[in-house]
Length: 64
Image (cartoon, rainbow, N blue to C red; front, top):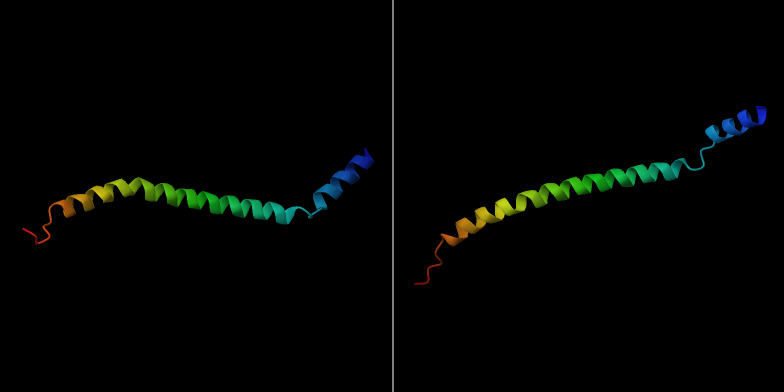
């Protein structure tokens, strides 16, 4: 049982993989923000395109 406690204590105190975990968490956060922005932009593009189309189709260019 004592060997088990020592090995668990070593595992808990070891910080050799902490930087990797930080980078994975940071990368996941950046990816999630990018996905949110992408979904927000793509959902509003068709509405704006229809508005622009309506304005452009009612304009005349001066050629008769």
